[in-house]
Amino acid sequence: MIYDRIFARIQLIYSLLRQQMFKKDNYNDIILRELKINGRIANSELAEKIGLSPSACLRRVQELEHSGVIKGYRAVLDTELMGNSFIAYVGIGLNEHSIESQLAFEHAIKPATEVKECHNVTGSFEYLLRIETKDIKSFKAFHADVLGSIPQVSAITTHVVMDSPKDERI
Image (cartoon, rainbow, N blue to C red; front, side, top):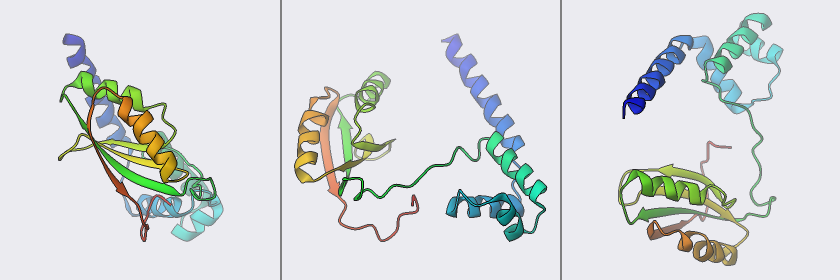
């Protein structure tokens, strides 16, 4: 019990220190917007776009990385070309509302490569999953073999994606 309180205080102090390290201003807002659009932009091009010298721009980007505001860079893959043209959002209800039940579910779902996102949410179910599979047949197998075999799961609600007119993850 005492370790939990100590750990919570350490997390709070760490969070406050990270917030102090991040200076929110116009230049950083523009840098973040540009990097969100193109994470591979050259520093010289980014500096020119925002009106800073390349060294000042690089220093700001490094500060944003070190403070944790920029968590990383990644490639955005085309799900269809990768062979996953079936996308569904799945609501998962648990049979118990305990930390142990949540941790057990999270542990069980981690190795599932079909699960691209897992969010603990409020509302009529505890988790919202983004599932990507090859087709409906593959999804049905995942639904039965993976989700259906997790003892903590009491309800599964599926919403199939028909189109994505806006997707800012791309």
